[in-house]
Image (cartoon, rainbow, N blue to C red; front, side, top):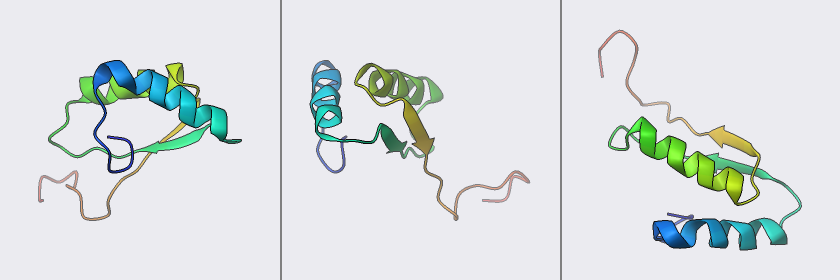
Length: 71
């Protein structure tokens, strides 16, 4: 998804390039939950990089799981 719009894998990089061309900043944020594998997050980050975004931040939610195993 880009914002709230679903995007197919084959359309992702071209759409990201179009967005990057309209922006001055190369900063973008990725939000993913536990239902998304790390491999998929890495794929999306690679697509972001290929699309022109080189400053990628990860968004965390304060209510996420804790390190002590208590969710």
